[in-house]
Length: 523
Image (tube, rainbow, N blue to C red; front, top):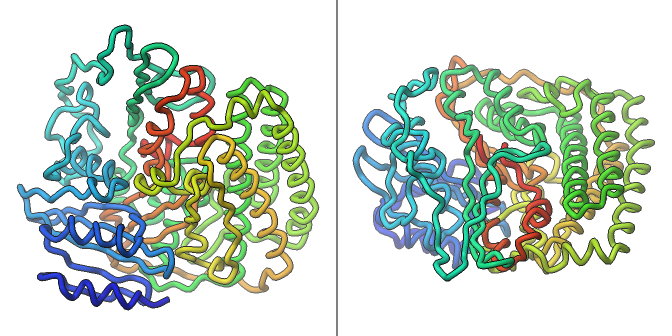
Protein backbone atom coordinates (compact mmCIF):
# COMPACT_ATOMS: atom_id res chain seq x y z
CA UNK A 1 0.00 0.00 0.00
CA UNK A 2 1.44 3.36 -0.98
CA UNK A 3 1.42 6.65 0.88
CA UNK A 4 -1.22 9.05 -0.49
CA UNK A 5 0.31 11.45 -3.02
CA UNK A 6 -1.20 14.53 -1.41
CA UNK A 7 0.29 13.88 2.01
CA UNK A 8 4.04 14.19 1.31
CA UNK A 9 3.42 17.19 -0.96
CA UNK A 10 1.67 18.99 1.88
CA UNK A 11 4.28 17.91 4.41
CA UNK A 12 7.12 19.31 2.32
CA UNK A 13 5.76 22.81 2.90
CA UNK A 14 6.20 22.60 6.69
CA UNK A 15 9.49 24.13 7.90
CA UNK A 16 11.77 21.96 10.00
CA UNK A 17 9.99 18.69 9.20
CA UNK A 18 12.10 15.64 8.30
CA UNK A 19 10.57 12.61 6.61
CA UNK A 20 11.89 9.06 7.00
CA UNK A 21 10.39 5.96 5.42
CA UNK A 22 10.57 3.20 8.01
CA UNK A 23 8.87 0.69 5.70
CA UNK A 24 6.46 0.58 2.79
CA UNK A 25 3.67 1.06 5.33
CA UNK A 26 5.32 3.29 7.94
CA UNK A 27 6.29 6.95 7.44
CA UNK A 28 8.13 8.70 10.28
CA UNK A 29 8.10 12.50 10.58
CA UNK A 30 10.61 14.27 12.84
CA UNK A 31 8.47 17.17 13.90
CA UNK A 32 9.31 20.48 15.66
CA UNK A 33 7.07 20.88 18.71
CA UNK A 34 5.57 24.13 17.48
CA UNK A 35 4.28 22.40 14.35
CA UNK A 36 2.32 19.73 16.26
CA UNK A 37 -1.09 21.45 16.54
CA UNK A 38 -1.33 22.40 12.86
CA UNK A 39 0.12 19.11 11.61
CA UNK A 40 -2.17 16.91 13.70
CA UNK A 41 -5.17 19.07 12.81
CA UNK A 42 -4.46 18.57 9.13
CA UNK A 43 -3.99 14.82 9.52
CA UNK A 44 -7.33 14.38 11.27
CA UNK A 45 -9.48 16.94 9.47
CA UNK A 46 -8.04 16.90 5.95
CA UNK A 47 -6.47 13.44 5.58
CA UNK A 48 -9.09 11.70 7.80
CA UNK A 49 -6.33 9.98 9.76
CA UNK A 50 -7.16 7.99 12.88
CA UNK A 51 -5.23 8.59 16.08
CA UNK A 52 -3.62 5.30 17.16
CA UNK A 53 -1.63 5.97 20.34
CA UNK A 54 0.88 8.22 22.07
CA UNK A 55 3.98 6.97 23.84
CA UNK A 56 6.85 8.55 25.71
CA UNK A 57 10.45 7.36 25.93
CA UNK A 58 13.18 8.77 28.19
CA UNK A 59 16.78 9.47 27.19
CA UNK A 60 19.60 11.07 29.18
CA UNK A 61 18.46 14.67 28.78
CA UNK A 62 15.09 14.57 27.04
CA UNK A 63 11.78 12.84 26.58
CA UNK A 64 10.86 11.63 23.12
CA UNK A 65 7.15 11.59 22.31
CA UNK A 66 5.77 9.46 19.47
CA UNK A 67 2.32 10.30 18.10
CA UNK A 68 0.96 7.53 15.87
CA UNK A 69 -1.80 7.94 13.29
CA UNK A 70 -3.00 5.68 10.49
CA UNK A 71 -4.97 6.20 7.30
CA UNK A 72 -7.82 3.65 7.10
CA UNK A 73 -8.29 4.15 3.38
CA UNK A 74 -4.69 3.26 2.47
CA UNK A 75 -3.31 1.27 5.43
CA UNK A 76 -0.43 3.71 6.00
CA UNK A 77 1.02 4.34 9.45
CA UNK A 78 2.27 7.84 10.31
CA UNK A 79 4.58 8.55 13.24
CA UNK A 80 5.21 12.09 14.49
CA UNK A 81 8.36 12.04 16.59
CA UNK A 82 8.96 15.05 18.85
CA UNK A 83 11.85 15.77 21.21
CA UNK A 84 11.04 17.42 24.54
CA UNK A 85 14.22 18.46 26.41
CA UNK A 86 14.03 18.25 30.19
CA UNK A 87 11.90 21.03 31.63
CA UNK A 88 10.15 21.96 28.40
CA UNK A 89 6.48 21.70 27.56
CA UNK A 90 4.75 20.43 24.46
CA UNK A 91 1.64 22.03 23.00
CA UNK A 92 -1.48 20.04 23.73
CA UNK A 93 -3.21 18.60 20.67
CA UNK A 94 -6.31 17.37 22.46
CA UNK A 95 -8.39 20.39 21.43
CA UNK A 96 -8.25 19.21 17.79
CA UNK A 97 -7.40 15.51 18.34
CA UNK A 98 -9.65 14.85 21.29
CA UNK A 99 -8.79 11.15 21.28
CA UNK A 100 -5.34 12.18 22.57
CA UNK A 101 -6.77 13.87 25.68
CA UNK A 102 -6.36 10.94 28.08
CA UNK A 103 -2.96 10.09 26.56
CA UNK A 104 -1.67 13.56 27.42
CA UNK A 105 -3.08 13.32 30.94
CA UNK A 106 -1.42 9.93 31.37
CA UNK A 107 1.95 11.27 30.16
CA UNK A 108 1.79 14.08 32.74
CA UNK A 109 1.02 11.72 35.62
CA UNK A 110 3.60 9.08 34.69
CA UNK A 111 6.42 11.18 33.19
CA UNK A 112 5.82 14.70 34.45
CA UNK A 113 5.54 15.89 30.84
CA UNK A 114 3.37 18.99 30.75
CA UNK A 115 1.20 19.86 27.77
CA UNK A 116 0.59 23.59 27.57
CA UNK A 117 -3.04 24.49 27.13
CA UNK A 118 -4.40 21.26 28.61
CA UNK A 119 -6.95 22.19 31.33
CA UNK A 120 -7.19 18.89 33.22
CA UNK A 121 -3.70 17.63 34.07
CA UNK A 122 -3.31 15.74 37.35
CA UNK A 123 -5.35 13.30 39.50
CA UNK A 124 -5.81 10.86 36.66
CA UNK A 125 -3.74 7.67 36.74
CA UNK A 126 -2.16 8.69 40.04
CA UNK A 127 -4.87 9.71 42.47
CA UNK A 128 -3.81 12.72 44.53
CA UNK A 129 -4.95 11.08 47.77
CA UNK A 130 -2.58 8.12 47.23
CA UNK A 131 0.41 9.33 45.22
CA UNK A 132 2.75 12.20 46.11
CA UNK A 133 3.30 14.97 43.57
CA UNK A 134 6.34 14.79 41.32
CA UNK A 135 6.80 11.04 41.66
CA UNK A 136 6.65 10.38 37.88
CA UNK A 137 6.75 6.57 38.24
CA UNK A 138 7.66 5.85 34.62
CA UNK A 139 10.86 7.90 34.84
CA UNK A 140 14.12 5.98 35.26
CA UNK A 141 14.83 7.54 38.63
CA UNK A 142 11.78 5.84 40.13
CA UNK A 143 12.40 2.41 41.62
CA UNK A 144 9.31 0.38 40.83
CA UNK A 145 10.34 -2.45 43.18
CA UNK A 146 9.62 -0.39 46.32
CA UNK A 147 6.43 1.20 47.61
CA UNK A 148 6.71 5.01 47.94
CA UNK A 149 7.15 6.13 51.55
CA UNK A 150 5.00 9.23 51.11
CA UNK A 151 1.30 9.51 50.47
CA UNK A 152 -0.53 12.04 48.38
CA UNK A 153 -1.57 15.47 49.53
CA UNK A 154 -5.17 15.06 48.41
CA UNK A 155 -6.49 13.63 51.67
CA UNK A 156 -9.41 16.05 51.49
CA UNK A 157 -10.34 14.99 47.96
CA UNK A 158 -14.01 15.52 47.21
CA UNK A 159 -16.02 14.56 44.17
CA UNK A 160 -15.98 17.28 41.50
CA UNK A 161 -19.30 19.00 41.05
CA UNK A 162 -20.55 20.96 38.06
CA UNK A 163 -24.30 21.07 38.68
CA UNK A 164 -25.20 23.90 41.06
CA UNK A 165 -28.98 24.05 40.80
CA UNK A 166 -31.13 23.54 43.88
CA UNK A 167 -31.70 19.91 44.81
CA UNK A 168 -28.85 18.62 42.67
CA UNK A 169 -26.63 15.94 44.14
CA UNK A 170 -23.61 13.83 43.29
CA UNK A 171 -24.38 10.12 43.55
CA UNK A 172 -21.36 7.79 43.67
CA UNK A 173 -21.44 4.35 42.07
CA UNK A 174 -18.42 2.29 43.14
CA UNK A 175 -15.51 1.87 43.45
CA UNK A 176 -16.49 -1.23 45.47
CA UNK A 177 -19.10 -3.34 43.73
CA UNK A 178 -20.98 -6.53 44.40
CA UNK A 179 -20.78 -9.48 42.03
CA UNK A 180 -17.44 -9.52 40.15
CA UNK A 181 -17.22 -6.01 38.70
CA UNK A 182 -13.82 -4.37 38.69
CA UNK A 183 -13.03 -1.25 40.73
CA UNK A 184 -14.19 2.01 39.22
CA UNK A 185 -15.94 5.11 40.55
CA UNK A 186 -18.68 6.87 38.63
CA UNK A 187 -20.01 10.15 40.01
CA UNK A 188 -23.48 10.84 38.68
CA UNK A 189 -24.72 14.43 38.95
CA UNK A 190 -28.48 14.62 38.93
CA UNK A 191 -31.25 16.96 40.07
CA UNK A 192 -33.59 13.98 40.29
CA UNK A 193 -33.79 10.99 37.99
CA UNK A 194 -31.97 12.32 34.94
CA UNK A 195 -28.17 12.16 34.84
CA UNK A 196 -26.89 15.56 33.80
CA UNK A 197 -23.16 14.92 34.09
CA UNK A 198 -20.91 11.94 34.77
CA UNK A 199 -17.36 11.93 36.08
CA UNK A 200 -15.38 8.69 35.69
CA UNK A 201 -12.53 7.89 38.07
CA UNK A 202 -10.56 4.76 37.22
CA UNK A 203 -7.04 3.43 37.97
CA UNK A 204 -7.87 2.22 41.48
CA UNK A 205 -5.90 -0.88 40.56
CA UNK A 206 -3.18 0.71 38.46
CA UNK A 207 -0.56 -2.05 38.20
CA UNK A 208 2.29 -0.34 36.36
CA UNK A 209 2.66 -3.18 33.85
CA UNK A 210 4.78 -1.03 31.55
CA UNK A 211 7.11 -0.14 34.43
CA UNK A 212 7.33 -3.76 35.58
CA UNK A 213 8.36 -4.76 32.04
CA UNK A 214 11.47 -2.57 32.08
CA UNK A 215 14.57 -4.67 32.64
CA UNK A 216 12.69 -7.94 32.13
CA UNK A 217 13.44 -10.38 29.35
CA UNK A 218 11.28 -10.46 26.26
CA UNK A 219 9.93 -13.85 27.37
CA UNK A 220 8.82 -12.33 30.66
CA UNK A 221 7.31 -9.44 28.71
CA UNK A 222 5.11 -11.90 26.83
CA UNK A 223 3.72 -13.17 30.14
CA UNK A 224 2.85 -9.60 31.14
CA UNK A 225 1.23 -8.80 27.80
CA UNK A 226 -0.76 -12.01 27.89
CA UNK A 227 -2.06 -11.71 31.43
CA UNK A 228 -2.89 -8.08 32.18
CA UNK A 229 -6.38 -8.44 30.64
CA UNK A 230 -7.55 -12.05 30.58
CA UNK A 231 -10.67 -11.49 28.50
CA UNK A 232 -8.48 -10.54 25.51
CA UNK A 233 -5.29 -12.40 26.43
CA UNK A 234 -4.66 -13.87 22.99
CA UNK A 235 -5.08 -10.56 21.18
CA UNK A 236 -2.56 -8.75 23.38
CA UNK A 237 -0.12 -11.64 23.23
CA UNK A 238 -0.41 -11.62 19.44
CA UNK A 239 0.33 -7.90 19.26
CA UNK A 240 3.38 -8.38 21.49
CA UNK A 241 4.70 -11.30 19.43
CA UNK A 242 4.26 -9.35 16.22
CA UNK A 243 6.43 -6.56 17.64
CA UNK A 244 9.20 -9.03 18.43
CA UNK A 245 8.85 -10.60 14.99
CA UNK A 246 9.20 -7.19 13.35
CA UNK A 247 12.36 -6.46 15.32
CA UNK A 248 13.89 -9.81 14.40
CA UNK A 249 12.57 -9.78 10.81
CA UNK A 250 11.20 -13.21 11.67
CA UNK A 251 8.84 -14.85 9.16
CA UNK A 252 5.96 -16.75 10.75
CA UNK A 253 4.95 -20.04 9.06
CA UNK A 254 1.71 -19.91 7.11
CA UNK A 255 0.10 -22.61 9.23
CA UNK A 256 0.83 -20.65 12.41
CA UNK A 257 -0.54 -17.44 10.88
CA UNK A 258 -3.76 -19.20 9.93
CA UNK A 259 -4.19 -20.86 13.32
CA UNK A 260 -3.59 -17.52 15.03
CA UNK A 261 -6.71 -16.28 13.26
CA UNK A 262 -8.66 -19.33 14.46
CA UNK A 263 -7.71 -18.68 18.10
CA UNK A 264 -8.26 -14.91 17.81
CA UNK A 265 -11.75 -15.31 16.36
CA UNK A 266 -12.67 -17.88 19.00
CA UNK A 267 -11.63 -15.36 21.64
CA UNK A 268 -13.77 -12.71 19.92
CA UNK A 269 -16.87 -14.95 20.00
CA UNK A 270 -16.37 -15.78 23.68
CA UNK A 271 -15.71 -12.13 24.56
CA UNK A 272 -18.90 -10.98 22.83
CA UNK A 273 -21.00 -13.77 24.35
CA UNK A 274 -19.83 -12.64 27.80
CA UNK A 275 -20.86 -9.07 26.98
CA UNK A 276 -24.28 -10.28 25.86
CA UNK A 277 -24.64 -12.14 29.16
CA UNK A 278 -23.89 -8.94 31.05
CA UNK A 279 -26.44 -6.98 29.03
CA UNK A 280 -29.12 -9.58 29.70
CA UNK A 281 -28.25 -9.63 33.39
CA UNK A 282 -28.37 -5.84 33.68
CA UNK A 283 -32.01 -5.92 32.53
CA UNK A 284 -32.89 -8.73 34.97
CA UNK A 285 -33.31 -11.38 32.24
CA UNK A 286 -31.85 -14.20 34.29
CA UNK A 287 -32.73 -16.96 31.80
CA UNK A 288 -31.16 -15.10 28.85
CA UNK A 289 -28.10 -14.38 30.97
CA UNK A 290 -27.79 -18.07 31.87
CA UNK A 291 -28.10 -19.08 28.21
CA UNK A 292 -25.34 -16.66 27.20
CA UNK A 293 -23.15 -17.77 30.09
CA UNK A 294 -23.67 -21.37 28.98
CA UNK A 295 -22.29 -20.44 25.56
CA UNK A 296 -19.31 -18.71 27.21
CA UNK A 297 -18.57 -21.76 29.32
CA UNK A 298 -18.78 -24.11 26.35
CA UNK A 299 -16.37 -21.86 24.41
CA UNK A 300 -13.96 -21.88 27.34
CA UNK A 301 -14.11 -25.67 27.49
CA UNK A 302 -13.59 -25.85 23.73
CA UNK A 303 -10.52 -23.64 24.08
CA UNK A 304 -9.11 -25.90 26.78
CA UNK A 305 -9.63 -28.99 24.61
CA UNK A 306 -7.91 -27.30 21.68
CA UNK A 307 -4.82 -25.97 23.43
CA UNK A 308 -4.86 -26.84 27.13
CA UNK A 309 -5.95 -23.46 28.51
CA UNK A 310 -9.37 -21.84 28.72
CA UNK A 311 -8.00 -18.36 27.92
CA UNK A 312 -5.25 -19.41 25.48
CA UNK A 313 -2.43 -18.68 27.91
CA UNK A 314 0.87 -20.05 26.66
CA UNK A 315 -0.33 -20.70 23.10
CA UNK A 316 1.59 -17.92 21.37
CA UNK A 317 5.34 -17.66 21.03
CA UNK A 318 7.49 -15.29 18.95
CA UNK A 319 7.81 -16.91 15.56
CA UNK A 320 4.54 -18.84 15.69
CA UNK A 321 2.61 -21.04 18.11
CA UNK A 322 3.34 -23.57 20.83
CA UNK A 323 0.12 -25.51 20.22
CA UNK A 324 -0.96 -27.10 16.94
CA UNK A 325 -4.39 -28.32 15.89
CA UNK A 326 -4.37 -31.88 14.60
CA UNK A 327 -7.13 -33.28 12.42
CA UNK A 328 -9.20 -34.41 15.40
CA UNK A 329 -9.23 -30.88 16.84
CA UNK A 330 -10.08 -29.34 13.49
CA UNK A 331 -12.95 -31.85 13.24
CA UNK A 332 -14.05 -30.80 16.74
CA UNK A 333 -14.24 -27.18 15.59
CA UNK A 334 -16.25 -28.12 12.52
CA UNK A 335 -18.73 -30.02 14.68
CA UNK A 336 -18.97 -27.58 17.59
CA UNK A 337 -19.04 -24.10 16.05
CA UNK A 338 -22.24 -24.48 13.96
CA UNK A 339 -24.14 -25.64 17.05
CA UNK A 340 -22.78 -22.77 19.17
CA UNK A 341 -23.62 -20.34 16.38
CA UNK A 342 -27.17 -21.67 16.25
CA UNK A 343 -27.56 -21.14 19.99
CA UNK A 344 -26.34 -17.57 19.62
CA UNK A 345 -28.86 -16.93 16.84
CA UNK A 346 -31.68 -18.38 18.93
CA UNK A 347 -30.70 -16.17 21.86
CA UNK A 348 -30.65 -13.14 19.57
CA UNK A 349 -34.19 -13.88 18.35
CA UNK A 350 -35.44 -14.35 21.90
CA UNK A 351 -34.02 -10.99 22.95
CA UNK A 352 -35.38 -9.25 19.86
CA UNK A 353 -38.85 -10.61 20.64
CA UNK A 354 -38.80 -9.27 24.20
CA UNK A 355 -40.41 -5.83 24.11
CA UNK A 356 -39.58 -5.15 27.77
CA UNK A 357 -35.91 -5.89 27.05
CA UNK A 358 -35.83 -3.66 23.98
CA UNK A 359 -37.47 -0.85 25.95
CA UNK A 360 -34.46 -0.89 28.28
CA UNK A 361 -31.70 -0.72 25.64
CA UNK A 362 -33.16 1.09 22.62
CA UNK A 363 -32.16 4.78 22.53
CA UNK A 364 -30.13 4.22 25.70
CA UNK A 365 -26.52 5.32 26.06
CA UNK A 366 -26.44 6.79 22.57
CA UNK A 367 -23.10 7.90 21.14
CA UNK A 368 -23.76 9.51 17.79
CA UNK A 369 -21.39 9.27 14.83
CA UNK A 370 -19.86 12.71 15.33
CA UNK A 371 -19.03 12.11 19.00
CA UNK A 372 -17.65 8.68 18.11
CA UNK A 373 -15.37 10.36 15.57
CA UNK A 374 -14.26 13.12 17.95
CA UNK A 375 -13.41 10.67 20.74
CA UNK A 376 -11.85 8.17 18.37
CA UNK A 377 -13.67 5.19 19.85
CA UNK A 378 -12.76 1.78 18.49
CA UNK A 379 -14.12 -1.72 18.15
CA UNK A 380 -17.82 -2.64 18.46
CA UNK A 381 -18.53 0.72 20.12
CA UNK A 382 -17.31 2.55 17.03
CA UNK A 383 -19.05 0.24 14.59
CA UNK A 384 -22.37 0.63 16.46
CA UNK A 385 -22.05 4.38 15.90
CA UNK A 386 -21.54 4.21 12.15
CA UNK A 387 -17.74 4.03 12.04
CA UNK A 388 -16.45 1.20 9.83
CA UNK A 389 -13.07 0.99 11.54
CA UNK A 390 -11.44 -2.42 12.02
CA UNK A 391 -7.69 -3.07 11.87
CA UNK A 392 -8.24 -6.47 10.29
CA UNK A 393 -9.29 -4.56 7.17
CA UNK A 394 -7.99 -0.99 7.59
CA UNK A 395 -4.48 -1.91 8.77
CA UNK A 396 -4.36 -5.65 7.93
CA UNK A 397 -1.83 -7.94 9.60
CA UNK A 398 -0.94 -11.61 9.29
CA UNK A 399 -3.28 -13.66 7.14
CA UNK A 400 -6.00 -11.01 7.41
CA UNK A 401 -4.24 -9.43 4.43
CA UNK A 402 -5.85 -12.18 2.34
CA UNK A 403 -9.23 -12.43 4.10
CA UNK A 404 -10.77 -8.92 4.20
CA UNK A 405 -13.50 -9.94 6.68
CA UNK A 406 -16.99 -8.44 6.67
CA UNK A 407 -17.36 -5.51 9.06
CA UNK A 408 -20.90 -4.99 10.43
CA UNK A 409 -21.91 -1.39 11.02
CA UNK A 410 -24.96 0.11 12.72
CA UNK A 411 -25.92 3.77 12.76
CA UNK A 412 -28.00 4.38 15.88
CA UNK A 413 -25.15 4.25 18.42
CA UNK A 414 -27.43 3.07 21.22
CA UNK A 415 -27.45 -0.02 23.40
CA UNK A 416 -29.45 -2.04 20.91
CA UNK A 417 -27.02 -1.18 18.10
CA UNK A 418 -24.12 -2.37 20.23
CA UNK A 419 -25.96 -5.62 21.04
CA UNK A 420 -26.57 -6.23 17.32
CA UNK A 421 -22.87 -5.66 16.61
CA UNK A 422 -21.88 -8.22 19.25
CA UNK A 423 -24.15 -10.82 17.66
CA UNK A 424 -23.16 -9.96 14.07
CA UNK A 425 -19.43 -10.07 14.79
CA UNK A 426 -19.84 -13.44 16.50
CA UNK A 427 -21.53 -14.86 13.40
CA UNK A 428 -18.80 -13.45 11.17
CA UNK A 429 -16.08 -14.92 13.40
CA UNK A 430 -17.69 -18.37 13.12
CA UNK A 431 -17.82 -17.94 9.34
CA UNK A 432 -14.15 -16.89 9.19
CA UNK A 433 -13.04 -19.96 11.15
CA UNK A 434 -15.16 -22.48 9.26
CA UNK A 435 -14.14 -21.08 5.87
CA UNK A 436 -10.47 -21.06 6.86
CA UNK A 437 -10.26 -24.60 8.27
CA UNK A 438 -10.23 -26.45 4.90
CA UNK A 439 -7.29 -24.34 3.76
CA UNK A 440 -5.01 -24.67 6.79
CA UNK A 441 -1.56 -25.21 5.31
CA UNK A 442 0.66 -28.13 6.20
CA UNK A 443 4.02 -27.44 7.78
CA UNK A 444 5.61 -26.17 11.00
CA UNK A 445 3.87 -23.93 13.50
CA UNK A 446 6.93 -21.95 14.59
CA UNK A 447 10.28 -20.74 13.39
CA UNK A 448 13.24 -19.44 15.42
CA UNK A 449 12.89 -15.77 16.38
CA UNK A 450 16.39 -14.57 17.34
CA UNK A 451 16.65 -11.68 19.77
CA UNK A 452 17.90 -8.46 18.22
CA UNK A 453 18.23 -4.88 19.32
CA UNK A 454 15.49 -2.68 17.98
CA UNK A 455 11.96 -1.37 18.36
CA UNK A 456 8.63 -1.83 16.65
CA UNK A 457 4.97 -0.90 16.79
CA UNK A 458 2.47 -3.67 16.16
CA UNK A 459 -1.28 -3.92 16.30
CA UNK A 460 -4.26 -6.25 16.31
CA UNK A 461 -8.02 -5.82 16.32
CA UNK A 462 -8.73 -7.13 19.82
CA UNK A 463 -12.31 -8.16 20.67
CA UNK A 464 -13.03 -4.68 22.06
CA UNK A 465 -11.11 -2.80 19.37
CA UNK A 466 -7.77 -1.60 18.08
CA UNK A 467 -4.77 -2.28 20.31
CA UNK A 468 -1.22 -1.08 19.69
CA UNK A 469 1.93 -2.46 21.33
CA UNK A 470 5.29 -0.69 21.22
CA UNK A 471 8.36 -2.68 22.20
CA UNK A 472 12.00 -1.65 22.46
CA UNK A 473 14.64 -4.15 23.54
CA UNK A 474 18.40 -4.57 23.65
CA UNK A 475 20.45 -7.19 21.83
CA UNK A 476 20.43 -9.50 24.85
CA UNK A 477 16.62 -9.48 25.02
CA UNK A 478 16.13 -6.92 27.80
CA UNK A 479 13.04 -4.73 27.51
CA UNK A 480 13.70 -1.00 27.79
CA UNK A 481 10.17 0.15 26.90
CA UNK A 482 6.83 -1.59 26.53
CA UNK A 483 3.75 0.44 25.69
CA UNK A 484 0.25 -1.04 25.76
CA UNK A 485 -2.26 1.09 23.87
CA UNK A 486 -5.53 -0.66 24.66
CA UNK A 487 -9.11 -0.25 23.41
CA UNK A 488 -10.33 -0.04 26.99
CA UNK A 489 -8.25 3.09 27.56
CA UNK A 490 -9.66 4.60 24.36
CA UNK A 491 -13.33 3.83 24.88
CA UNK A 492 -13.70 4.74 28.56
CA UNK A 493 -12.86 8.29 27.52
CA UNK A 494 -16.14 8.59 25.59
CA UNK A 495 -18.38 6.69 28.00
CA UNK A 496 -19.37 9.80 29.96
CA UNK A 497 -20.96 11.37 26.88
CA UNK A 498 -23.26 8.38 26.36
CA UNK A 499 -24.59 8.62 29.92
CA UNK A 500 -25.58 12.29 29.89
CA UNK A 501 -29.36 12.67 29.75
CA UNK A 502 -30.09 9.05 30.68
CA UNK A 503 -32.35 8.07 33.54
CA UNK A 504 -30.53 7.26 36.74
CA UNK A 505 -31.77 3.66 36.85
CA UNK A 506 -30.46 3.00 33.33
CA UNK A 507 -26.81 3.58 34.25
CA UNK A 508 -25.91 -0.11 34.89
CA UNK A 509 -27.66 -1.17 31.66
CA UNK A 510 -25.78 1.37 29.54
CA UNK A 511 -22.54 0.35 31.26
CA UNK A 512 -23.18 -3.28 30.32
CA UNK A 513 -23.89 -2.46 26.66
CA UNK A 514 -20.48 -0.80 26.32
CA UNK A 515 -18.66 -4.00 27.31
CA UNK A 516 -15.69 -2.06 28.67
CA UNK A 517 -12.70 -3.58 30.46
CA UNK A 518 -11.21 -1.86 33.48
CA UNK A 519 -8.32 -4.35 33.41
CA UNK A 520 -7.35 -3.05 29.94
CA UNK A 521 -7.49 0.49 31.31
CA UNK A 522 -5.82 0.07 34.71
CA UNK A 523 -2.79 -1.60 33.24
